[in-house]
Length: 220
Ligand SMILES: [Zn+2]
Ligand SMILES: [Zn+2]
Image (cartoon, rainbow, N blue to C red; front, side):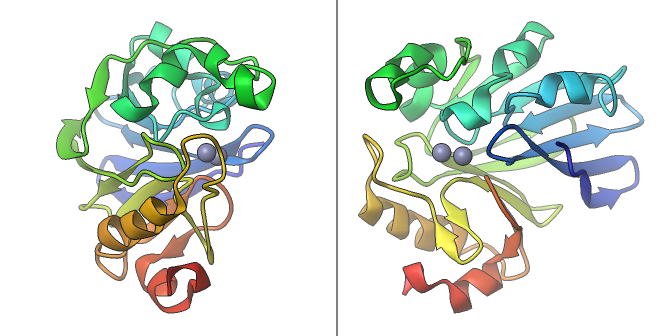
């Protein structure tokens, strides 16, 4: 499964989205084709082998940005790290990424996820430069305590993990979920982005800020 889409392109810079794993997790890959540098957004099972043998051949992945610590977003994180990618995630999900056995209590399994130590524990809001692209972080807890979105203003794209879906929102019934916080965070941190921002959710079809502001029944 890969279902590659080019979601943005300017000069030597490309932003692609793929789907990997049993839950068809949307995965972002930013590449500077001249400098041969890249970063990833999420690393589901199957993403490493596929990308290393195709798009990322000869390319240095500088960073892996994790939207949140659920197994379907981090299965191959340790493989990218072993290759030298710096792993970024919010402190609220740090424990479960570094010790997936913590999921056994509620999932009944660690889902086969290997532990992956973080290199950069990100805070609630901020921005950083990776591979020449500025990435804004905004925290939107409620699906998980450490859920964040990654917004690339220059590309007009936001990867929002499992906070918001096209015409839906993330589940908040998991341990440490919080529906009120989730809805408040979506309003404050996502719907405040420009109307024409493309939203790439953790699963399913892409959407826009304008579409969700007008049509999403969960956000009224
Ligand atoms: Zn999730
Ligand atoms: Zn997910």
